[in-house]
Amino acid sequence: MKIFIIGNGGRENTIAWKIFNSDSFTENNGKLYCTLGNPGIDVFAEPVSISPEDITALKEFAVTEKIDFTFVGPEVVLSQGIVDVFEKSGLMIFGPTKKAAEIESSKIFAKSLMTKNHIPTADYKSFSSNEYDKAFEFLNDCAYPVVIKADGLAAGKGVIIANDKDIAEQTLKDFTAGNSLSTAGLNFIIEEYLEGDEISVFVICDGSTYIILPFSQDHKRILENDKGKNTGGMGAVAPILKYMNESLIEKIKTKIIDPVLKAMKDEGRVYKGCLYCGLIIANNEPYVIEFNCRFGDPETQAVLPLIKSDFLEMLIASAEGGIKNYSLEIDNKYVCCVVLVSKGYPEIYETGKLIKGLEEAETINCLIFHSGTEFDNHRNVISSGGRVMSVVGISNDSMEDAANISYRNAEKINFENKYLRRDIGHRQLATLSTSSNKNKEFAD
Ligand code: AMP
Ligand code: GLY
Image (cartoon, rainbow, N blue to C red; front, side):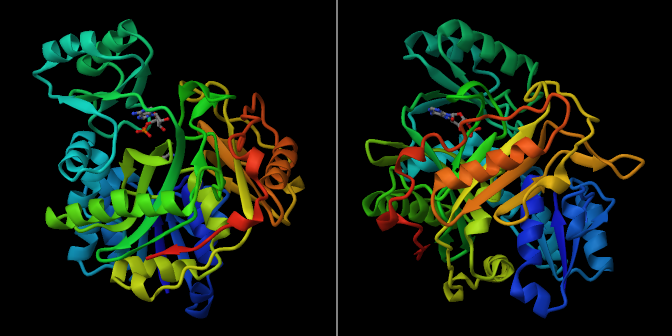
């Protein structure tokens, strides 16, 4: 069985590891391929030198190599319609179609879908490229902070939390001049700021039913105590025990997941693949801050180690419409993922730094997933991206223990000017070992 992974970051390294360790992969004599690869991914998958954004070349490779199943990591190719192209050629692929992926690629579409269907989210107003004056005027009436979001895909740079009107005005100027985001911010929304606790929810959908993977929590800001610039994610923990209870989980299903999947179906945008719901929990009520059409990074690194049932079978069930026959099993464990980043990230960052100590990392209860790394001419591993790698600690006992394992191993891996946040999991650490509320399976 030949499987092709598109994308080559920490999320895809985790997916490759998990597929490689699925019984169905071994039983079917599995072979993995991955676009470009990296030193972490290459352990499991043969690298293929095709850009993860070149849909035509990707399809040709899949046809020529007789690939049985393709997994897509990044949002860009999903929003460009890779699933439509592959399915048209009779190729099985995991992910939503172009029309369904619009739930991430247009924030204006996602907000209006939520409003029409009474899905709880922050109040907002959308503005198109010829309504700048109206938008500037609207800023006079806003309560601050206010959130300004580019309509289009912006690689994690499209959301600005403006603490005052001056910053809001400057953001609108930057967006509309195309300074920071090219065309992604020409249309935009201005949204109410919600105070609360954020969680990430991965919903695996097959077009008619779904399962929910363990809840996780990302740490988006660059500095400790959630200060500083937004990043792609500096670390994640799973499962989330604090704030979660049966009544909240029921609300997440009935007020958010069920209506959004129904609305998408009613609009002719049947949703398959992973629907990532970014939620803010305020007073035991869930509000959507974003939908993504894919697995999150670094949440994937924290969630997948908790899955006990066959992961490859789950992905195939999503593509084939078989989720109702899939039995999700979750391990009663705790996972903490700490991301090591390059100096300068999330702005211009250093690269080419020699990474030392990888062989010293523990192999029991610790996983290392590579994001921005490559081999130099002497087969040394060097940094090549802003987020360099994830150090993942896994514990049977507590989140504190999982965090200790991550940090102990993060110390062993070194490169010049390595930076990491020292407080990953801080919002969970108070309630970590309440066994009565340990991981549950949330299957519909
Ligand atoms: P996004 O790129 O949509 O995930 O937004 C980036 C981050 O901005 C989120 O993870 C939140 O921390 C924050 N954010 C987005 N929308 C809101 C909102 N309405 N209220 C408060 N924080 C928000
Ligand atoms: N960790 C946030 C994201 O993947 O969008």
